[in-house]
Length: 229
Image (cartoon, rainbow, N blue to C red; front, side, top):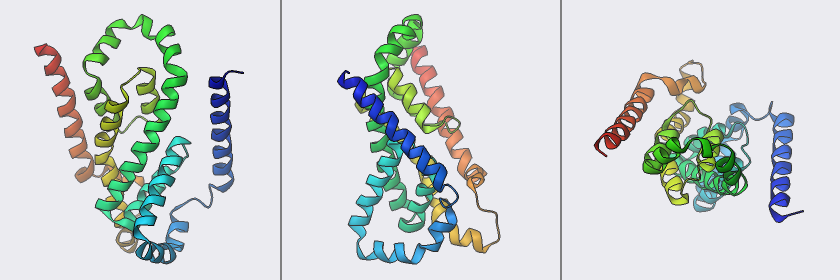
């Protein structure tokens, strides 16, 4: 067995274990359990702030690598325990690091196959991607309709540059990340007001309109850049 096959099998096993754990524990993995332990966790963070930040970033990165469902719950928790700004920053760092590691692995395993079997027939698109690599990746990260892991797989299949992927991910996920941590930081007020809590809150006009505007401007920028060239 080649080393490449060994690592692929090992990663698939880890994914399977992760999903088995999730489906066995999914009834307990919800906002209520976070709120039930709020005081204990908050007291620990106040006494061990730097350590707590590092634990959070590493934990978030690992969950992203394993594509663990409900990672968004951890994003809300980041806002709840660390506030909108600090929570948004550490969620962004954790998500970016985890995504980069998963991206490197995925590119190592799948890029050659994808290039040989698919990109070979899409030379025009491949050329377009190479000319607009960072912009394409940034727009991909801004787009809320595509699951995070699918975005990463698309980038790895296209053979994106590691540093451009890192920067585009860090900047591209910031808007939605800070929206989620802002909602997380206001969980108690939202619940106290009697409003139904859920991720539908992300799509409120004050949140979604700026993202749509940024997405539109990015797409227009790519269009005019290619027109001028």
